[in-house]
Amino acid sequence: MAEALFRLRSGPRSDWTAASAGLAAARGHPPSSASIEVMRELGVDISGHRTRPLTAELVERAAWIITMTGAQAAEITERFPGVTGRVRRLGSFRVGDAGDIPDPLGGPVESYRQVRDEIDRCVMDLVLTLRDADPATHRGERTSA
Image 1 (tube, rainbow, N blue to C red):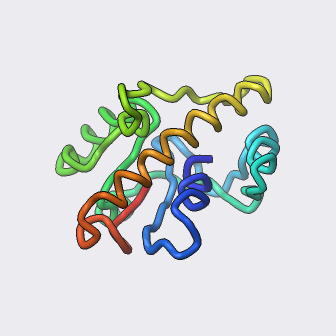
Image 2 (tube, helix red, strand yellow):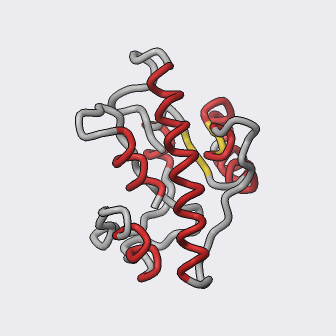
């Protein structure tokens, strides 16, 4: 959901890129039906998305690595020690810090809707942060969310 929301909120003419990947993700699985449903409510079709694991290549290309939780950020910095300054929680972009964003997996559709809305608020603040940042540093191939 976060990758699709980033693409939606950054706009069609944005030269920023986003690539989602999971710490424990297997390659090639589709989104849950609940994720597809709540994203369609916003007019976004994620049914073609497929999971992939976080790799050293993705980490190397990323200007920023955005996580949903502090535990994910800690695991990434442990696996890839050189990335510490590039890892941020998505919730940290909100004024007052929104904290960790929970994984709604297995919960009711309403949980997915609430998580989608929290991700969306944080993504909008992330986009504002990127727009205020130095374009040479945070644009193009090296920007990931």
